[in-house]
Amino acid sequence: MSDSYQILKPAAWHEDARSVPRSLEYGDFYHGEAGALPQARHVFLGGNGLPGRWRGRAAFTIAETGFGLGHNFLAAWRAWLDDPERSGQLHYLAFEAHPFTVADLRRAWSRLPADHLNLAWELAGHWPALLPGVHRLDLQEGRVTLTLLFGDIRRLARQAQACVDAFFLDGFAPRVNPDMWSPAVFGQLRRLAVSGATVATWCSAGQVRRDLRDAGFLVEKVPGIAGKRDMTVAVLRPGLGAAPPDMVRRRVAVVGGGLAGAGVAQALAGRGHQVEVWDPQCALDVDPALRRRGAAALVPALSPDDDTRSRLSRAGLARARARWLDLAEAARPQACGALVCAQSAAQAEAQRHALARLGFPEDWVRWLDPAGARLRAGVGVPGGGLWFPDALRVCPGELIAALLSLPGVTRRAAAVGALVPADGGGWSLQDAGGRELGRADRVVLANALHARTLLATVMPVERLPVLSGLAPLAGQVSLYPAGASDVPRCVLSGHGYCLPPRQGWGVAGSTYRPDADEAVADEAGHRDILARVRDWVDARDIPWLGRGAAAGWAGWRAATRDHLPLIGAVPDRPGLWLACAYGSRGLSWSALAGDLIGAWMDGEPVPVERELVRRIGLR
Image 1 (cartoon, rainbow, N blue to C red):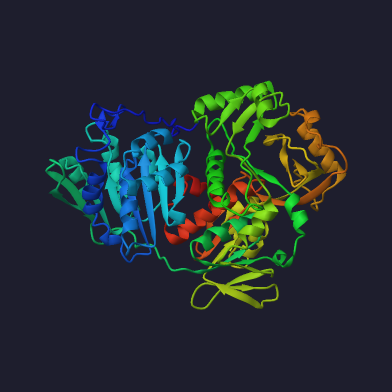
Image 2 (image 1 turned 180 degrees about the vertical axis):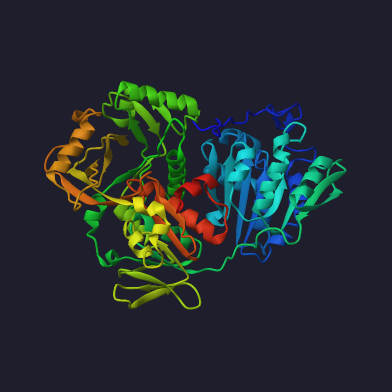
């Protein structure tokens, strides 16, 4: 486990004799004598010149140190809703070392006035599992986003990426929580600040004011609230801070109409960009019956050291659930959960040991012994395994079709053979013969192995060593007529996988053929898949598995040496992005990559840590 990993310790609910919430960890109160909402309005909204400063803006971003019970966020959200001249988007970034469970938050929020209570219940419905790292919540039909960073602010302040207009400094008092008021944290806040960014806090300690000045802010004291004589406000010195993000809606070409391209198209179209998806397969009318019978699973990875793949897969599952569970029924994933089955007694012990080290909450993952696993799955699982209740069973064909049919997405049935910088900016998309197919302000290459070929038309790919390791992997899955069977009742994952039946078909997979000349579904592959699955599950409990003639599906995957995706901007080629090399985790990376690219394009808070961004970029 890396030295930076810390088990997340939730806050414990406690009230004093006056029913004021108090932290046992820090021995301090969550709000002052005036009450949480009056303090939020006077100190944090008023101290930052809100609502006036967000008026007429396309988007406005607030960052808070110390989310606590969420009263400052709810007050800002309420004020934004009540302002007819509000910004088009409200983004809110908040750090919290000890988040509350949703049950404790509901207890605290039950005392809110009615106009705040409806917002609180919407937030409660989106509240994430208490896992370390970054969590993005989409509220108010996507017009309000809350990006929570759970963990030590000394580390996470360095990991955040955003363009912040206003800061709410609301940690516990410096005498009990000095790390939250440190020069190092203030330096990171300055890094996040845009030109003209402001700060407000109830704290008027001289050292805090001096450290804010040293970080680059012009600081002054102003009257406080409810017997507190002074509070502190500040503004970033002229000449410091990044320019506010460019919120112009663009014409974006996405090259590739598979899972990668569909995820990017949904995210960018949802932000108001005009998206064209270029893929010769867009001309094919796939038989709906054939499209519906395919299936795949989105299951998070879990490693004892919480490595990059594990952290990204958690984020990927969260973004997929946020983006896809509201789709029409045919395309909506089935939230059936997944059992990652132990392949041996040693692996079962390793799984239990990993859970003990990581300290993840049981509502996100827990160990099931063989008896518990059988009850959950409906089939015998001799080794038990890890139960992930949020895992999804997905029909990729229906999902892709739905995402590429969303408003703002246009499909172009043509193969892009070259990219050429266009006069005046942007890109010209050309066919193999040099004929212009169209133009775009931005281009996202989401066409797997072919991304390297297309990128070579605009730059020497030798400058990007990671692309040299991009390799094709052929593979197949087996499909069996399942009749009315409903087993397994969840995704079974191990050395291979077996999925719950859908539309009368059961699916098992998959093969990996790194040296294949073509991707084909054959009898050897079907036998291989059966042998894999029968090693760790009692196949007698699955009436359709291996019974009758199997149909098959085969295709190609593109993977890097470290099996991490490539997502990010192409260096020295403005307006050109990559979203490829998803390997066997296309579902894990699809929605996440779309939201990453959308956040970068629009200057939103980024939904993963900066160190993870570096590991999936063109390194």
